Image 1 (cartoon, one colour):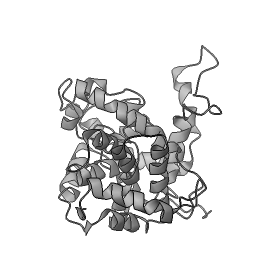
Image 2 (cartoon, one colour):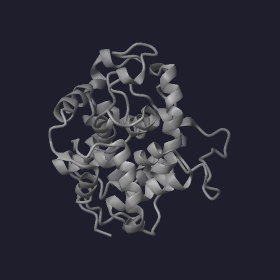
Image 3 (cartoon, helix red, strand yellow):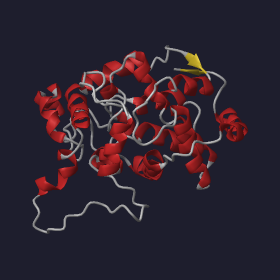
Image 4 (cartoon, one colour):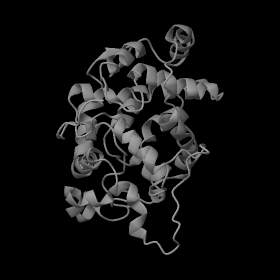
Length: 301
């Protein structure tokens, strides 16, 4: 493992998977018999004592969330959409995109020595083994491709991290909510009501979430994949809703129906790592056929 290096605005985390490690502590796998959800043993335990996982988080993770919550404003998220969603950076096929992402090296990842490509295939194989639809498998295969934003100079806090609505009051269900005190939007009364700039039940498509790899890969693939897959891609990091129900008032009935797919996807996203790498030579024909079924030969990134 690499030695700890001083945090910077671009790289407070030693590797991107530190964020996912923290999520696994906060949201244990409900399917695991060996991992029990957090429960208060003392019925008189105070509410502020329920978040010890935050207090005990690695300093790099705390610094990552501090920067994320400081900089992810409504204006920032809006500007990044204008900057990146014209999709004029590169034209690539899906395999070239995966190989490009593979240049984002995580040599210090404590969970796996797998490459980015192998991790994506492993996620897809876990979904495939459970007999999920083919479009579901493809969503697992491409869900992290948006992390290539790091290769274009974007800081980690603008690529990974839990996503949340901007332009309205921050839910206390978001991790480290105390760090929002330094966000400029916290001083803007327009953004600090429950609805903020939105209307009750307006639907998430009308809500501007914080910027990151979810929104980016959703826009790259939105013309090609089924809506259920697109919800998975767009909202898989929206933990304050799909795990905490902190923004029910912004959702409409269609969102609630689609979020059953987001919730179904979440365990595959977090708990599919395995030290045994997938055999690419054996898997290649299946995945080449899968990609060809849904995606064009070239995508705009």
